[in-house]
Amino acid sequence: MDVWFALPYGPLLIFAMRIVDVSMGAVRILLMMRGRRGGAAAVGFVEVLIWVVAVGNAMQHLSSPYHLAGYAGGFAMGTYVGVSVERALALGRVVVRAILPAPEGTGRAAAQLLREEGYAVTEMEGRGRSGPVTVLNVVVARRHASAVAERIESVAPAAFITVEEIRTSRGGMLRPLPTSQALKNEQVRK
Image 1 (cartoon, rainbow, N blue to C red):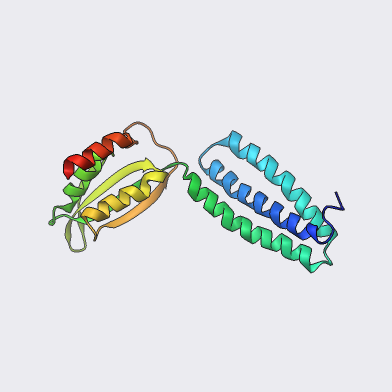
Image 2: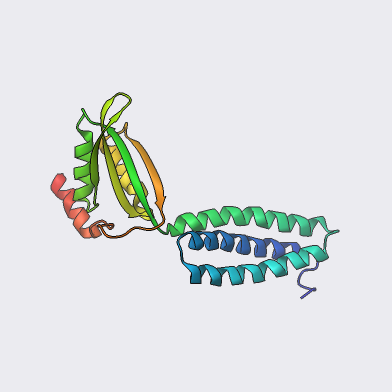
């Protein structure tokens, strides 16, 4: 194994291993936060195996700036890749909360549009700095958060929208209608 980590391939191997183990660390943390203990443990096991080999070989070559750069560069790139993987997986649920000025009637229109798309929407009346507002709460799978926010903005461009992580939820409707139903609703509106 020492031959593999000698120059010129060693720094590249360490770089690649760090990308993998740091990316796995990001996924492991995500799984832990979602309460998926088994998956987090399995990912953690593989992550640490890779890390031990990478760090061990980097330590054997401390006098080589190439090996050190491979280790540090792999960590940096692994962080970037890990965030990208985490975004692509989009695990979990979020609540999309929109605050819309009530007098314009956009709150009700946005809620209706979302309901036609199959989303469950809770409407509440409130009071903001400038007067009455409508607050919309929509709990969705995280991968649908952008679509919900875009739909709200299409009706109410001035809406104040936040997206918050949900650790647990019970009951209620969380999924949009199947795509074919959403398309039918879109055609009916036109």
